[in-house]
Image (cartoon, rainbow, N blue to C red; front, side, top):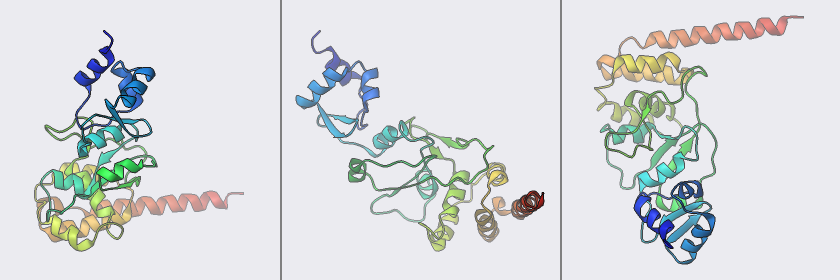
Length: 241
């Protein structure tokens, strides 16, 4: 069938999600067919290796699914992850999606035309801690869009204080965070290497009065001791002849 690649594409292409050349190839679209579809306006080229069906519009989740194929560890974190799971202080007029990932990435210009976002590669946890711990798609959400569970998102939110986040807003958000799971929160705190984050979580948790806000000082103490021992070891090595 002469138009078989086009028929395959129309049947398989996810609506609202830009497609890269590898994804199109998996759908049976060759480079020659791709060039023809673009010239005949069956596909719109958004940018380098980014295509969309004619008449379609990129959706938020579609863009994130596209980016997840290109950015290692990409996930929705911090304030946005909490908001998507019902933990919010107020509703923003225009959503700014907070994104985290493992590697630097230059976002294509077309992404910014359809999505307001921030992106960072800060690592809050030790090297032995699995990066994808606590990252999963939302129920009934796009399976390619990973979102931090509330406990991890809380640490990501706290780490942003003084950068992209005010302490006042974090305090207001915490009022709605009664349902954090203490065992899960402690698991993330055990592996968190950022002393500033641990100290602020401890203060905010105690002020909240919620069950998860108890017994947080021990994580601060353990990190302080680990840092002291590490510095002592470095000093000892430096003194060796």
